Image (cartoon, rainbow, N blue to C red; front, side):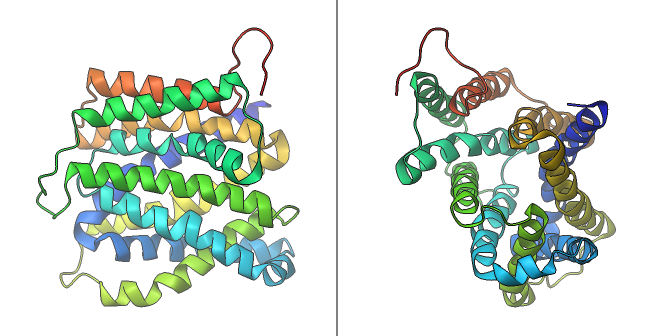
Length: 297
């Protein structure tokens, strides 16, 4: 990676780490559906003109069905699930469960695409799952909180969202090989906006949200989604997908930092240990880390 790549990687991790903070700030007043609509609609307004400027609108028109499906699986559903979880869980905890997406992606690829899993990757899957179980064990309170969402429901929503990210990544790999990444990013956000426009109108908050909630929604849309996609796909183009995916390991650190600085969320020792275990499992499951000695399928 060049110096520019490293800077973009850390900015991207900071933005995606902050997305959990902004969901916490906006979900209470907007509600999950309206907040996610503003997120994807704002990102669409930023990304579609960039796509047009690059002359890649024909790619969007040619592959709109597959891109729309990826938009539902990889944006609409996980964004909604994380927005629901934000009503009950801390910024840091959501980001740690989000880090399991690569683990589920590896498992889906093995089940669906017959990907080879060597002993390092199998061990990573096992470690990652154990990390999730350990982190969830003492926090899965089934009592509903102030906004009607229990901690157990929030944990389940985060894990389901991470599984959907894993499925969405494999759908893109299966259906969208060779399609310009920016067309996938812009088109998926456009499809998500169209899917959510009526539900957002139906569930629009009766009380007008305050300035901080609007600021959070704007930052979530333009910074954590629109600009973040531009940085991410720029990294893929310059440094390769494997290098760009290393952002996964930085996101929880920034989420912990933002939650501590801005919401006074103090991470516990259990949370930090669980995060370390899950990231170790992710590194093994994605092939970033290998066990010594020969690997056999």
